[in-house]
Length: 65
Image (cartoon, rainbow, N blue to C red; front, side, top):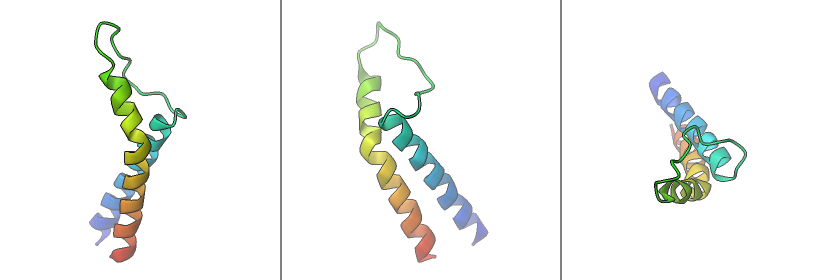
């Protein structure tokens, strides 16, 4: 049971980090190479919906236990 709450806490923290990066509050730790196409920017844009969704899933799973 404790391991489940630890898992949800990790998911919650990851969701907060993804939300922060997606909305520009935190910097992405890896800088894109100028020679590469902008797939990093596409990934960071996806963090705007993936981060809050992960936070909600973590909260729902923690309450359901």
